[in-house]
Length: 313
Image 1: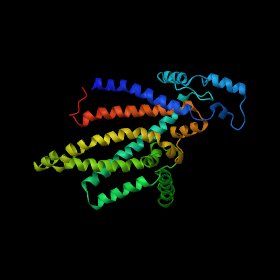
Image 2 (image 1 turned 90 degrees about the vertical axis):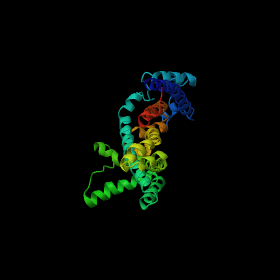
Image 3 (image 1 turned 60 degrees about the horizontal axis):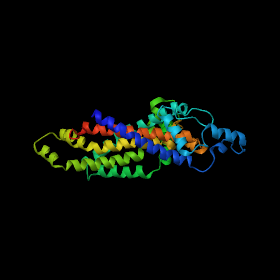
């Protein structure tokens, strides 16, 4: 497995180069002059504008600009903004907030999604199954903006004023890990619905397999059949989905961070796009690509743990 991991890491290099090059070209091909935007409504001095373009290499061909950027990335330098602020300094605190939010959403998604999906599969065709499927439709149908504000009203206002319960903070990060519970659920809402349905379908297919019927016919306890055979073999597509969803949760945190006033990378990305801070935008997306690649590697290595029949070497 060690050689497989090294091979996958080497394969990730051309993927990283290709994806970052496309991102770089897309961002730098956007219409408008990023130097002119610095002046706001006032026209920036032409001499100063020419100096800034030369300083930040905007006069160089696109491939040369990309080479300077990617060589910096490989040594941990993501460049600097047009205000002279290092992009690494912007990432320092804000990526921590987004990572905490994404991991909280992933844990909530895993617990709620797997739990409800398991219950729906075991109670197939009964009222529990239909209720859970109806709930998934609701989660998919309600936009993040609506669910976020509704939960803020119910948990942050109604629950506090009616029952005096102030356990769920609805703004900022002053309450520590509790600050991420409500925004984490909002961020994971749609993913929970998909995971519930995927768990239900995967487990129902596994329960119809011949080896499951054989184990039950031999008198093996139902709990052991479900835990050791059915659920374990159903986890491979679920782990694949969860691994890929981690990057989606980080990339989709823009709206959630704005609703709950979380100073994370999502807000920074929105502001940087508006100000045409190309180095920040490309840097954020590059880190998200790295998260995707790392998550996929971990998922692939988990396959052999879940199913010993899978061999990499």
